[in-house]
Length: 258
Image (cartoon, rainbow, N blue to C red; front, top):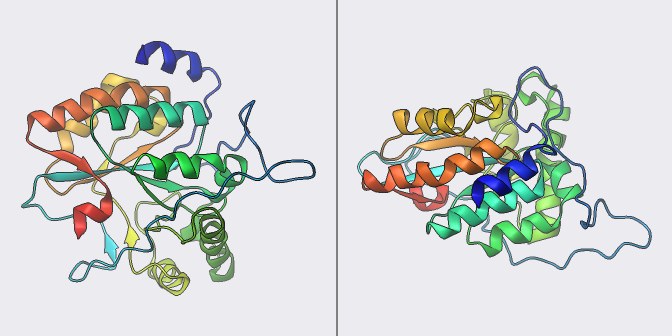
């Protein structure tokens, strides 16, 4: 059933990876029945339950790449953009396995798909900030970089009541000192990086995504994955099964580090 759903949606899926050769990577096309950006005659989405406020993890660095190595948990983190049908299918697979994930949403995607904020939170998952337009934030002047951070924070606040648990920089694994300072100014005590890159944004296929993650993951890992890719949806169940066989469980990033 999963393969059929993923294949059916794959044709319309938009690439959502943190591709350094791409200025914008948001997958913002509204779904056929979705509300799209607000406008005349449209009914705004119902307010969602409040997201967690920004996480503070005393004793951990400002820029977090992984959690404690002595535990039995990992955090699967997803860059939030792309086809909402694929995103919904992926969240359902996580929930079926009892896993909770962290979604770092692109602000323009939330403009186009505001109901996804509610879907993420209603599933017990965590929601954070992945900039407004998914530009190369490390290369931007300070004022533009700050606008990218606060623009997405404003969308999250409007939809969920908070600016989200985490900030992750766009089109880069690690933020510069400038961007770290701007994120803290915007209200995020930490910048969320990762220590395992699934490379799923390149669409190598589900077996390759599964192999890349399971070959590199360990206790405390923060794994970078993407919504909007059929191969990632198909890879998630065997990834979760592989973690379970190693005695590891997938939790939100806040649960991992606090």
